[in-house]
Image 1 (cartoon, helix red, strand yellow):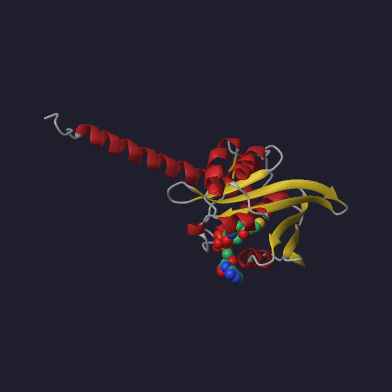
Image 2 (image 1 turned 180 degrees about the horizontal axis):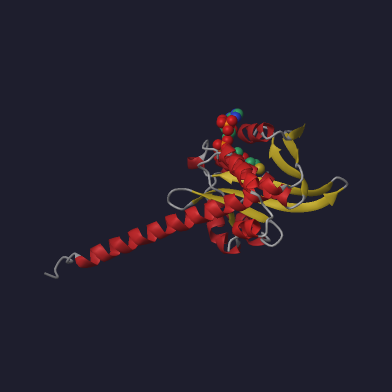
Length: 231
Ligand SMILES: CC(C)(COP(=O)(O)OP(=O)(O)OC[C@H]1O[C@@H](n2cnc3c(N)ncnc32)[C@H](O)[C@@H]1OP(=O)(O)O)[C@@H](O)C(=O)NCCC(=O)NCCS
């Protein structure tokens, strides 16, 4: 029994909750599916970050970072404490990554920081925004009060995403700190996150199986075709 079926079975969610959650989900960019990643995805994360150019690394990490710094950063991610979200393209390559890091508690409540990157070839399709929305939803559901982002103020695309999401932005010395006050979790936000995760997992599994079947078929076909010099 999955979490959704369980919630229905124990009466924790009603049909009305389900309808509202489906509506909230549809309001997001429908085609971008965001999966939560785990420690066994580290090599994919390294591949994604190493493919970022110098300027993108500067925008993402706030400074120029070499390959070894990226490798050390990925190695240091604590998947029990933080959450990492990813978006795959049609070839199942990781093209978007969002790191949601729990920071500390302040007077207003819990604070988390969000950092995001999207591969150059996949930009402008709503992936960065979807990763941000997913992080905000996750923050709400894990009792985070403030979602924080640190960017360079010349980062026009990120500033646009932040302002569109209603973040308060403070500028100083070419840098920008953006804050979003998150509303408390409710049934719809919890349900929406569960549904998003399940749909993204299912989509990934189906696409991976289709790819494996295609590869198997290709290998099988090749093995049936006589090789040069064998006939
Ligand atoms: C910032 C980044 C994550 C955006 O990813 P993305 O997948 O292209 O983002 P989206 O497609 O969801 O949205 C981009 C939005 O910015 C807008 N935008 C893009 N370039 C812009 C520019 N130069 N000026 C203003 N707006 C711009 C787009 O029109 C789009 O707006 P819309 O959703 O209203 O149409 C990506 O460019 C990136 O990885 N940059 C390098 C790393 C980085 O800067 N990380 C952020 C630091 S934490």
